[in-house]
Structure formats: structure tokens, C-alpha cells
Image (cartoon, rainbow, N blue to C red):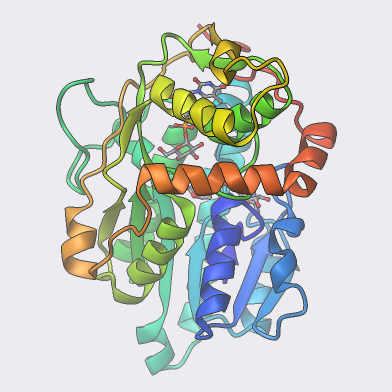
Length: 351
Ligand code: NAD
Ligand code: DAU
């Protein structure tokens, strides 16, 4: 079972797992503003894929689905995922990411206890988490390892930190076989156009300003989503029970570098009618409150213990991403028109 399988990373995970031919995937999703079944168009009607509409907070319904579908592995991705939305409305993050994860763990524990001995041993609950739980790093030193202390800054990262702790508590207290992974910033196809990379691509194609928070000096560590999906399968199948694994692509870039690279790709592929560069659309806007300066993942443990490495560099992955958005307006244009128009989020109620 993949929770949040209609989201950005979850849909990549569903496509990857079904594509291996080794799994039957049950996608459990509430279909919030961020959930989109058109991202799974290629899997519709596939014998090894089924969608179940449910909220992870609904423990009874989840318990029933776990039994009906005879689930033997759970990958938990369902979450409220956008930092700026968590500044405007933190309670939805507490409800889904904290209460929802604890509710899901309760249903999964009941299900696990009812399995036969062999199935109980093979069972895994994999919590898909974020590097943001570790807080921020100085611009010029340090990396996040699995031993880094938790120091979340935003309501989003605080809710993910809490959910990590609940997952570990269900392992230590009840013996549920869990694994955790903490990943850096993902990008790629089917990314909801409120996040930096798809927002900038969509705005550039619509001749809209490209909003860069502060001076654009903040650093994120980028990973192509399909590399993350492969990593998650590896963690679930080969990770040590009770352990966590950091996942990242050793691809630190300032936000300004990211935006400038997108502009250069678009200048080459879709020149503006005016003949001017897309760089002219860059606009510096009010910074994000509590903006973490830098994230940097040390993925040595995942590389050494699991044998995982990314296939894409930031340059090849970003070129693939820009090409995908150019070719797939059918996916993102209706979202811009009906769900989110690209306006600024994350300033309401901030200090
Ligand atoms: P997303 O916002 O694109 O998708 C979230 C999905 O969860 C949506 O399909 C939504 O409908 C579903 N969902 C939300 N609340 C639900 C509920 N109560 N019950 C059932 N389904 C619900 O998120 P994403 O970017 O794909 O992230 C997936 C997971 O990976 C999250 O847990 C996130 O914290 C984590 N993560 C994301 C990144 C990243 O860069 N995007 C990096 C590291 C970790
Ligand atoms: O690090 C992993 C995290 O990455 C995940 O856990 C989150 O779910 C995911 O949303 C992402 O969080 P970020 O806050 O890093 O992603 P976002 O795309 O919102 O912002 C990336 C950087 O770009 C950040 O420094 C803020 C900046 N930014 C963002 C937007 C939306 C801008 O400068 N302009 C923008 O318009």
C-alpha cells in the first residue's frame, strides 16, 4: 500500500513499483488539492494497480482496506507537504501529518498483529520523511547525517518531525517493523505548480514574474523524483528495521542558480516572442518567514548499505523536467486554472 499515491512523489512511486512487475500496488489517497489521479493515467486498469479513496485519519476505513487488500508492505507518503501553506494554516498539517500518521500506525498495528508469523516478519511500515526535520545549516559548512539532531523550523517540518517520532515509538513500544527515510528536495514531472521549480517553469511560459524569495541565496539539495522512487523501494526492501536512511543527490544549488538554469533551458527551447531572455522575468520578493538557509544531505549510508545512487545529475534531470512541462500542459494548465493560480502563499500571520 502506498499512501499519498496521487501526489507528486507517491505517483512516481506507484509508477515505479508497478513498472518493476514485482508488486501489486494499492494507492490510498484522500485526493486533497495536491492529489491528482491524472498523474496515474498510465496505470488505469492495470491488473497490478488499484486506487482506494480514503483519509489516513479514518482508522476504521484504513483498517478495512488493509484487510480487504491483504497488505504486506506500507509506504507512507500521504501528507500536507508545502511549507508556505503550513505558515498560512498550520492545523491541517497537525491533523494529517501528526494525527493522521498516528491513526494510520494504529490501523497498521492491528493489521500486523493479525498476520501469520512469516508475514509479520516480512511486513514493513516505511515512513517517507524529509531532511527539513533537521532544521537549517550555515551557508558554508555542515551536512545532515542520520545522527543529526531534530531542529525543525516551520509548522510543516515540525509536523514531519513529530510523525517520525511516532513511527519510532510504534517500533520501540509495539515492535512494529518500521524503516524511515529522510530525503532532500525532489523535482520532476507531475510536481504541483506551487513548488519553486514547477512554479517558475509555468510562470515563465505564461510570461509572469518569477518570484525569488529574499536574495535567492538559500540553498536546497535537489534530487530527481524517479531517483527518489528507486531509493524508496530499496529502503523498504533492504533497509534495517528501526533504522533511518538519508537520501539525496549531492546537488546543492542556490535558489537563484536554479531559476537561472530554468531560464537558460527555456531560452534555448522556447524563446520569448520579444526575443529577450526569461531572466528578465526574475523578481525578488519578500522572504519566507523562518526561511531555512541551507539543506545538504550526506547520503553515504544509503549508498554504502543499500547500494543506491541517483541516475540523473541536476542538469540532466532539470532538462528532462523542463521538457516534460513543455510537452504536458494538459496536466498542469487545468491545475493553474482550477486549483492554484500561482499567487504568493506563506505570508499570512507570519511574524
Ligand atoms: P504532495 O503534496 O504532492 O502529495 C501528497 C498526497 O497526499 C496527495 O495526493 C494528497 O491527496 C495525499 N493526502 C494528503 N492528506 C491526506 C490524508 N489525510 N489521507 C490520505 N491522503 C492524503 O506531496 P509530495 O511532494 O509528493 O510528498 C510526499 C511525501 O514525501 C510527504 O510525506 C513529504 O513530506 C515527503 N517528502 C517530500 C519531498 C519533496 O521534495 N516533495 C522531499 C522529502 C520528503
Ligand atoms: O527538503 C525537502 C522539502 O522540500 C520537502 O519536505 C517539502 O515537502 C518540499 O515542499 C520542499 O520544501 P521547500 O520549502 O524547500 O520547497 P519549495 O519549492 O517551496 O521552495 C524551495 C526554495 O525556493 C525555498 O528556499 C523557498 C524558495 N522559493 C519557493 C517558492 C515557492 C522561492 O524563492 N520562490 C517561490 O515562489
